[in-house]
Length: 327
Image 1 (cartoon, helix red, strand yellow):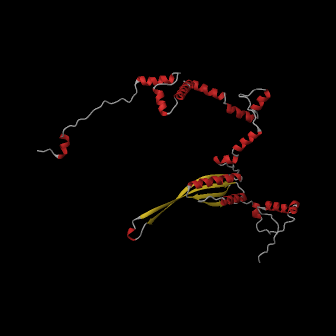
Image 2 (tube, rainbow, N blue to C red):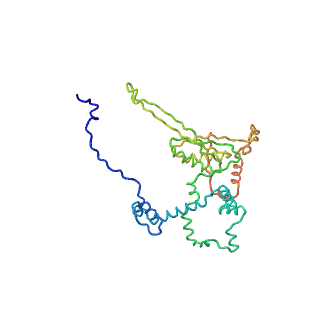
Image 3 (cartoon, rainbow, N blue to C red):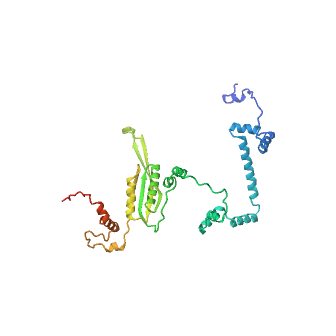
């Protein structure tokens, strides 16, 4: 009777298998001691360690020097490590009683003492000696190589003004579909606010607006074949505090003039008036009078310049074109 098909593989003849002895992955004791001896010896690095370092493209002498410095640093750190609680407290008191060089320099500056000038007066030689002065031509060439301060500030965070009262006067919201354009224009707006002396907060990230649409690819019997579209709107908020309304409007006009592509703006402005302005509501306004108006100091200054003697002499030969008023 023949054996069933499922058991034929088990009852079949055994195949010959070649067995090999496993090789150990650990290095021999003589090999490891040779590597350690090569690094510890003061002579030139030779042997298996040098061959392996050359294969990796490393100079054996530099490797030996770095290895020795690392071992020396480990020994020093072990010596400095406190062994008990009393020793650690003693080290901490020593550090408190003996401040470092930077702390001493700050203390001297606060007290109004300049160590370098004082050392020159007392005739004490500075370590390393004084640096010789460069020629005028060389100094000019070095100054030309250095970037101006405003150019170097581009690679740093934008500076900010500290608000006095913290009263919000403008909320500027930036919207876009590209995060790179948004971050660039927000940084530009913060720098513009600093140079216009406006205290600004932000840019504050706002929640994203996600919109999705499902559109059929075809009609009639192909209704089940649909396609999904998604649009994500990213937003940032910049708030101006304690700013003059005219300066805030100038800041917004400057941003609108240099608006970055793909970035939209939306601003909410709040203006605060005094109680005197509320009391003057309903009073008669005379022609040429600027009382009660916010821009009255500026208009008075303009009238003063126009009525000055120097302005009249400069505009003596200039003829103002006549403008016909519309009926």
